[in-house]
Length: 209
Image 1 (cartoon, rainbow, N blue to C red):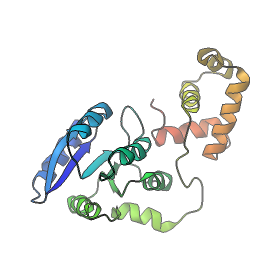
Image 2 (tube, helix red, strand yellow; image 1 turned 90 degrees about the vertical axis):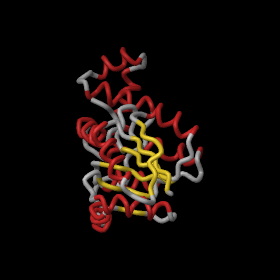
Image 3 (spheres, rainbow, N blue to C red; image 1 turned 180 degrees about the horizontal axis):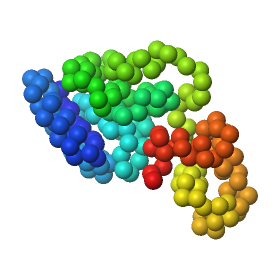
Image 4 (spheres, rainbow, N blue to C red; image 1 turned 180 degrees about the vertical axis):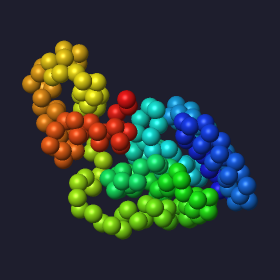
């Protein structure tokens, strides 16, 4: 039996996946987690072969969780469940060590195929995701930018409409430092202004509204 755990903060989807996979004769859903603390505690106690991981959790963007999980549990394979089908997101999850990427509206057969394929040690991409990567577009970002804690703070405060001076006062840094971070963020997101960078960061789940 393939031991599967699911991490998703949407109760209906979590229950739905559990019921779907429960009908398989080769898959055993051993744990369901609603958040990162539950997941960390559960994985420490329960041996798991495959983790189905929601890309956007309330606490964090799951891209940042993949590498630490793989480092801690070397035999664990991760399949990302996502509503995103943008090349930067897909590329980033695979680069961090996920072995599968499945859209949340994928068919049941694709989900089952994905689990068995990844369990065998092979990469699996659902049909929608394959179509995106097959386009091989060179426009825009190829991966989701990696942000520092301070850059995330700047994006978060800027998304609330705070000015440079207001952010500097709130974060206890100089206006010059804020402007430096703004410039770095624009470069990382390859945009012409911070508003566009904020829009992308929200889409990718790097900051929470």
